[in-house]
Image (cartoon, rainbow over all chains, first blue to last red; front, side, top):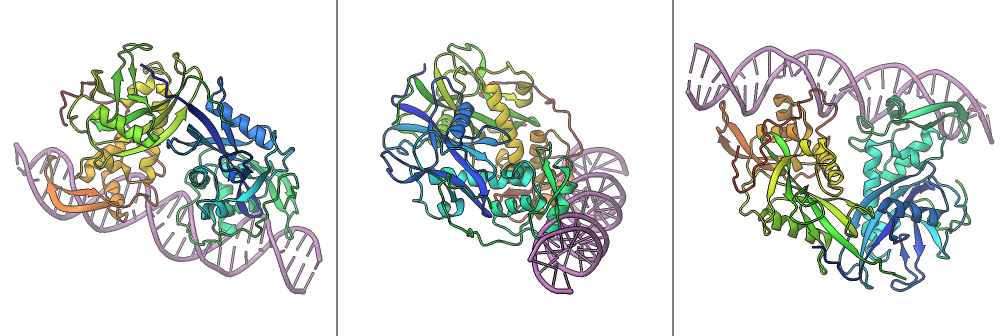
Length: 252
Length: 252
DNA sequence: TAAATAGTGTCTCTCAGACATTATCTT
DNA sequence: AAGATAATGTCTGAGAGACACTATTTA
């Protein structure tokens, strides 16, 4: 019954997202082989013989970032199977989205390819900015991330383990490209049950009154969702277009 | 760079959903080959050499239902790649969800397998009810359908081209397993811009005052979403567990 | 002190849910 | 007339957005 399609490969590609410098950024690698030699692409690789798709995605994430799973979120976005999407042959690709805080990467990953953070908006603005059909993959991943923030607590996965409400708000503003009223945002996120857990500590990272620190709470689904109608639209451009290699990492 | 994983096949499986007899139902086929000979499964098949995933899904839908695309909605749900999900070898599967009105099927499909509508709730209640990992595929597809009704106008794809608001409401009640206040539902769907287009005609399908007929409007995204908090929960059981073959179709 | 940021209070508007009321058909 | 269903009206409470105001830090 099953007839094997010849030369069929299945790959997993990752849209590893973070918020750096008030801006949604994605980890891209510079390709060291043909085709698309020298072009940017989402990191990824073939699924191994005894691997599940999720396992392959976690393995790729570890290889690229050197970071372990701790607190990260990973989620399948979709699959892509155009017969001509890879000139070398039939390669199906499953795209995963990973959300992580703006961490300094321990290593540059297993292979020698240069990995760098790049603003998502810049890549989405140019359909030719990424190899293969990765522009479409990134479009879908960014849209998924946008939607997930509305009705889940995944925004906090972009923050360090302890964070202020202002830091969380800046995540939402970066992902959505909007300006959010600080007062209303504060009231909203603190009123939703189990969304935030106060640590009792305070920080003076900013210039003004110290802010309370929170951890991500156990609530997964937000009800009602955070977003209704959005009013203020922020200039989507990032303040800093630095696509620095992840070795020379600087926290902001 | 690319090393082909041996014996890799990619299939597309379909969760073809409809609302029949006040109940969300899915088209299942009886397997005519091993493994899982005689068991029920979601219809599907291998992606052909020159096909995109979406094309393969549309082709399978046509083969199973004999119906053309007219007004139907199809959407990728997810991909499944457990190495042991198919005992014959490595088969990745991409699950698609299709939504259609309760139509009499022109033919029983290309092959001789018996295709029948079955209540989704029955299948979900028993993890062993479907072959392979299709119980999980159906779980994910049903959850996707549930969510999509909240913030899109896809509920209307379960209805015939012209429908009454009561018929649309019964779709929502069937998919969500809830009781919805007819008055509030009427006010909601008629107030959302471009959600429904009145035809100007009326029908007397019911016993009371004739209802106005509508078509599905051009609005794709509902804002705000229909569902907030749900109160009334309906008994999920279907009034009729008839899993009649699609040849002997009776409209309700 | 001024500037900056954190956090609270309050007003208004929209909308969901509950439910009464009216409208129009069949029997 | 009685019953059924369609459609509208009205009240209430929850919550979003706007924005004034207070609180607590640094320069």
